[in-house]
Amino acid sequence: MAVAKWLKLEKESGFYESFPLLPQMKIGRSTENNIVVSDNSVSAHHATIWTEDEKVFIRDEHSTNGTLVNGEPITHVRELHHMDIVHIGHLRTIFVMEEAAATQPMFPLYLSLSYFHRMREGETCALDIVLTHKPNEKFPEQSVSAFESVSGPHAVIQILPVFPGCACSPPVIELNKETNTARIWITPLVPRLSAQGCLHIRQTSRQQEIQVPFAIRTARPAFALLQTALWLPLFLVFMNLLNLRLRSDLSGAAMMIGQIILAMGGLLPCAMLCGLILLLLATFCYLRTRPLSGILCNRRLDKEA
Image (cartoon, rainbow, N blue to C red; front, side):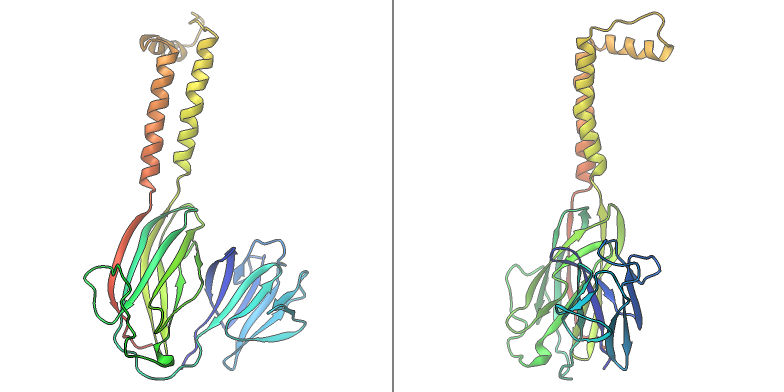
């Protein structure tokens, strides 16, 4: 049975990004690495991870701040095991692999997802997962056990979320006889993206990938319009306090703008109108980026690896 291996990189406290392990993977600040990190505690070429005879090893490449495995510094080569904590400089990572399990066949299970298919940059959204033993016409509001008559290691299902441009917490979840519901917190880290997320689901010798389409939008233009809506009226009020008068030597464009302002009743009414228009535009832009939820139900987990 092929064993899937992952490296979970902590982007923020409790939030991880997943990287499938390659036959050889280099980590560091240089763009020549397979995993490029911008942390100043990480050297340009910090560490190397590779696979040899189904085993995984890590080597520190004479880095400045060193590499630790489960709190112990490594000087040469160290073998990695499931759920080992690896510190690359001050950066925390978790090594995850599919553990050996009984080869008992997977019984039919149905996965229901409740998630946000449009998210806003920097705002954490929840992805809820429920496993049941029969199809659902809608997302289950209450937990219905999917493991009523099942026991043993084959009853454990491992789910690894991978969402490009996002941090996921927790990096790995396990569903079993006692727990058939889970929640994954997803935080977008980029301003704009349309991509396919993926849930890697593993149970014994079977594994399956479920695609989760999503989009990320940013509210930065809305905030810029809001700031303009606040400052422009104040500027026009200040101009009004100066009691400025139109002069004959002004340019044609300036004279036209001045005449329009006078026709509207002066700078104060014009300031209020400009502020209101910009405020409406800021509200419209902000609402266009609001998170939108969606439901994906009845994905049967019965495919071979």
